[in-house]
Length: 283
Image (cartoon, rainbow, N blue to C red; front, side, top):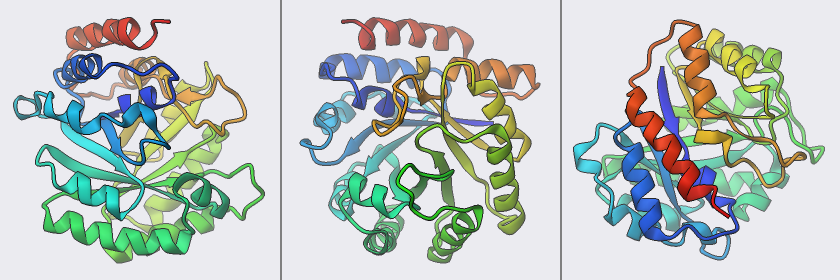
């Protein structure tokens, strides 16, 4: 199982600015753990995401060359992608494409149609820079706005992305409302319709819900799971403030109970957990 750790998602919602030196210290610790991908920062408007305004400075301090972990940066438009592809250490660009028109406007200030045009440009840009575009299908299990949603809609969006040549597609439960049955059903449908694609899952959960959601995704053939130490982060539009990312600790425990191997170094992971508590959870 491939694991993506999302400290960017964990940090971006914190009201207290995490000093750049602390971010660098924490991310460098995560780079020794054995994660496949590290979602470390984002190139978005500082007004929209002030916590991430130092992403370029953070990147300059990372020991990426001595780590097998690949770096991913989130972008919200072509301008952000132009910034991201200019940095050698970044391997993946992540873009949030919503299947909800309302959320796409709220999240990137663009329509779905405009976002699709951006995706085509960003995919081409990434290829030219020898990088890859990861598209997150946000609101992938429904939305709170009354916008149309169905598994068939998810298949349609996926087909459009595969037509562009996008290989990395990650359905995302943005508000944490998906049930294990819904998770397993959607990924089974996607796997049946696109048998040559390997899908990732970015899920959110209330405390206690994560193990069942993880098992459902794995049983449906998901090959990459995303989480954050301590379950920090999550969507600010979530109906419940307790809804956060899948806790990486729970992901590892659940995979272990299922007999599924990862590349995680337990000692380095324990050190990273302690550092997360010291640097991110202080008042």
